[in-house]
Image (tube, rainbow, N blue to C red; front, top):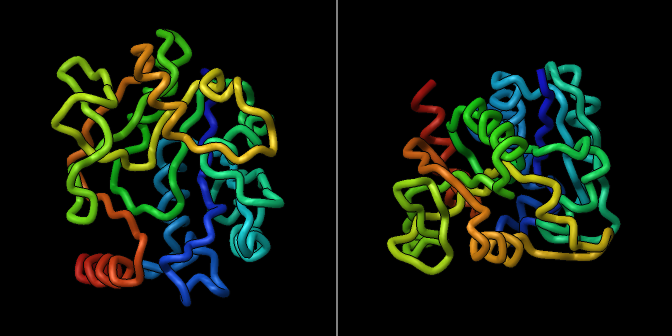
Length: 232
């Protein structure tokens, strides 16, 4: 059986979360009794992802201290430190040598999502066999982002220009070729790569209708924590 790796993006500074992130990396902020990043690790492990790559920059040593090699969570973590912020695509490009030159899943470390990652595992497998460069998980537009990002048609194709639009969740499966044109250790954003791939009809996706939160402010963090506490 083919093995697929997953990467959790954890290198962001978390400016909007200050002062909480002055001494704690944003993915280590707790909701529902455990750090945001641990929710991801547990869901990825449940879906069969046992080999994870995590990048870091700001307070990265705190992440390594908290998570170690991943054995306590039933996974194996390879760390991808960044001397300077490389943005999303630059961070992924820097980590490619750890991702085994095969399609992989990426999860933003500062979102909360109840998606079943086994579906993303299937999506990564489809990139290996059918040719698209990316498969994105889209969600309903939150109040703070009402216009959304991308259009999803009935055949699962994603387009950057049509409407109505859904919001990109920060969770996707990618083929390494999407990042082939980037130089290592160079900051690069993900959106331009995705838009170019969409123009070539190389991006597919699905609509997740479950729970998703962009935990970008202290208020959203506190609200999610209260919600999870009520759920027990």
